[in-house]
Image 1: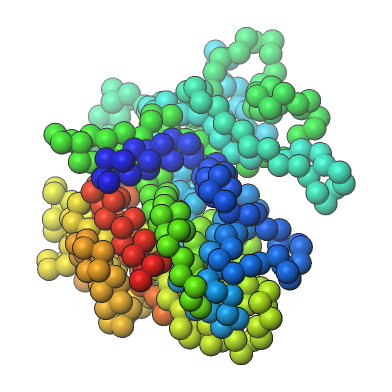
Image 2: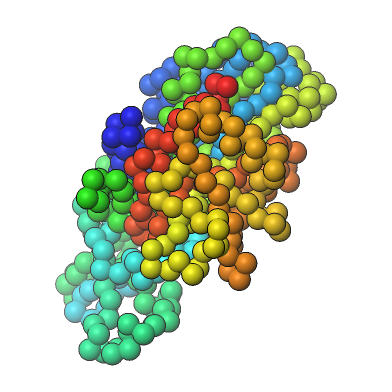
Length: 436
């Protein structure tokens, strides 16, 4: 299973250079496996059936899939959540900046909290979505765009101009991190260069393009490495590896649905890296709305919804920091997960994670049933940690739940490292959660 699922994850990562492509990849896989797409603007009354398979896409960058049980209005929900976005760079409007010698660089804005140094001197390209003129101003058409070949790089300043570079070098996001896209002659105007390239790729007139959401990505493919191929190296492992595991568990458990009052849910949100405060983020009411509409589609009431929530459980899946072999002192002395050691249960005394003893016990029991190892992550008490989807979601819906993830190195680097074995462990644990 480890090798097969590792190759599956690698294929998914290579097909998903940004959030929009990740969601589209999941959408196509779900559709190919018998899931029906629903529109939030349509009535769901009479459409949802017991044992039915459905999904909803929100703003092209978040996706929610669910598998109905017996259709009881107060059916409990078993939810796995993750996110589609990763730190990096977004291209600003009118980005072209012509420099000496006809060199053209692009004006970009940092998205989230990437490790900036890791983006230097990489083969980079562009992916995202493009909004075209539609049937009316309120309904533009959406197209995805991706350039597979390397188109850009962010060249580093040579050490000869900064002899202390290896001793620490503060970076300006506006000055130092702008990528070069090419060279044009002195007579050519750089303005509109990116727009024309996008229009050419989509085979549309540039006048049809109203706007774009374009990101940079490293074109180096995801791959296995290590003396025994035990590691996976890729961009966007945080958090596409968890999105992949949730999707795989949903598909693997599809044929094991029992005629019982349970709804299995996969919720892949966007914009976790910037606080989740968007209509497609975890701080929005989107998950609550979908859950309520499922209850109502089977004739349920708000009381049925409340009863369902009281019996529900959520796994908030976002990656964890593995103990770093060169920086052991940064980690808690007794609770530092290792790469390849199994799913990581994340705990914080100040409630930055939703995990408590009750939910930790539930997830531990699930891992034991699935026969996979598990481990714990707690911050070093002198090192501040981050937070993730769990607490944001429980502020909207009072769910029991656990924060967990895979132990990885170099979180938020342009290339992160995870364990092939952990990928298989987590898929097995998630599948057990859906079917237990």
